[in-house]
Amino acid sequence: MAKSDRLSPKARKDRLVIKELANETLVYDESNHKAHCLNHTAALVWKLCDGRTSVTRMTGLMEKQLNAAISEETVCLAIRQLAESRLLEAAVAKSEWLPKSSRRELVRRLGIAAIALPLITSIQAPVAAQAGSCRTNGQPCTGAGLGNCCPGQGLACFGGTCHVT
Image 1 (cartoon, rainbow, N blue to C red):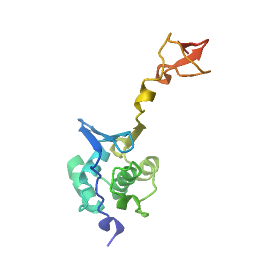
Image 2: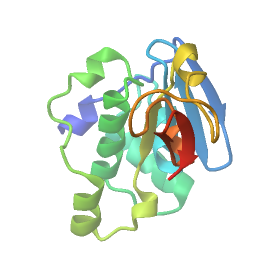
Image 3: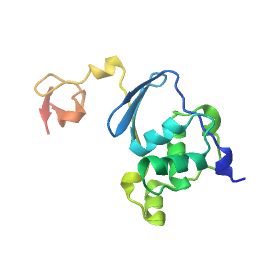
Image 4: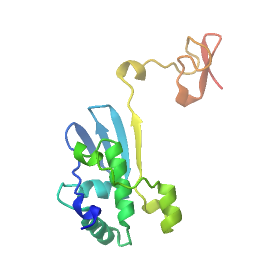
């Protein structure tokens, strides 16, 4: 029996807010205030993580759903990313045999389109004090360089006022 036949990961459901969209699934983890965006492939793997379905079986089910050839390595990459994002039960996260292949390595080795590979993008949500603490263009600021100006707006603190850089 292959190792992939024995692994049956289970998706974590506690303290998660889940929003399914057309081609992705958004997951907000209330325990660590992280938001995760799972692309279509990663979301499919996560949905199949019921604690009973093996990686081999997941691969077959995904091939049917996507109507495309999927490798077990692709499914294992998604499982590893889900485990690293703390979206699986803890027991799976300890699986030492999960491949350490990156998306880039799989594209090179398997010759598959990167769009079919699982991708999880995560961000740390700011606490309320941080969310309201940055200043916009023309507002007074403190500190040198970025200071307390909103960095996403391309602002920097000059002479006590936030200016576009």
